[in-house]
Length: 430
Image 1 (cartoon, one colour):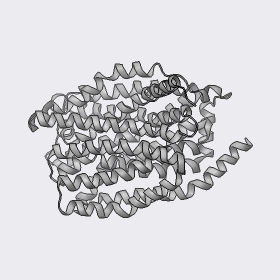
Image 2 (cartoon, rainbow, N blue to C red):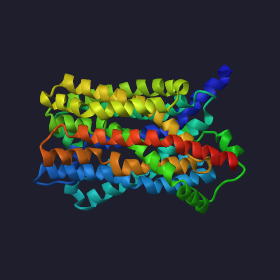
Image 3 (cartoon, rainbow, N blue to C red):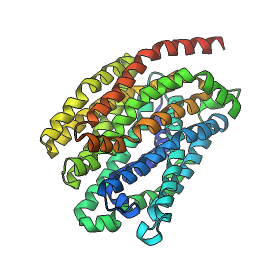
Image 4 (cartoon, rainbow, N blue to C red):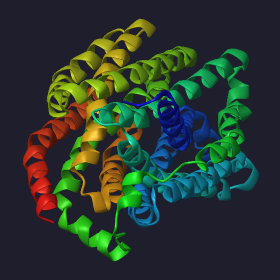
């Protein structure tokens, strides 16, 4: 039984380790929310579609650096420790957001502006490559017996707080500033707020204690050993990629893409879309720990099966219903339904992924699977959805993209069991 002082220490550990995860997701959300304004400031063009696509592609480019960050920073965390890795990622993350927030527009410094914004996004992506894995692994290693799903769910939970905070800032700004001022400088305010909280986040994280499980390890693998282990366990990494595809596509669809979809495709007011996004963040924050705790009781795989199947069969019909007569009420209804599926699936998936990864490459393996899925599929969801709507004329087609992601998650849940059994046998014999 945990005594009150231990419980308080655990709570503060969760808050400290999740703080940087909050900033990482806040950065990404703000860029996605203001993609239209960023496109006009840094990628001016006579074609509004081209400006928006360049902005969304820059948003997605950050995800291309995630696999590199997963390998480099993940290996660092597996060798030097979870705390050291998390502090380093926060440093890279801070440089990235400062670069974007303070960069003059194209009209002031020309091509240097979009180039520097791209570099800022790449730095954010590099740090994020290990951030999610590092936080998830840290939480799994400090979790009390029988509550690992609940603890690890707060990795995603901290992201939802970031979604809500970013959306709330957007709601306030849109209520106070006219569109021309939002375009001129208002979009920078959320980024500057992210810069202001950086010192506080460093203060929180520097007091992190290393996990007992890492300290107890007698062997710290070198970079070459980690790479060999990742290669040897490529099957588990592939399964992880497929599992995360469901998570990352649905997450960026219902959060980062919602303001752009609501405004540019459904022609709803910016304020309506941001309010919906705020509600989605609150819904995600509710379902993630609830379903993480449920997975501790009934197991991970039943939830993985049920909610990938639900997404597979309902995503497209829901989107068809939404675009048939767009309104604030319909957008909110569809987004909350998709949020329920996402939160329920992810509450079980993240902890399951930490459990099937070999312990010597737990951070780098988890981070690599997560970052590759995000780089190839999830991070480009806003750009892919925008492009598919443009070329097909079908405004509901993002629902098919969600169904594809759900099919990947369902297949992974089916294949994961023998892989997990083989892994456990390897660990028992090794």
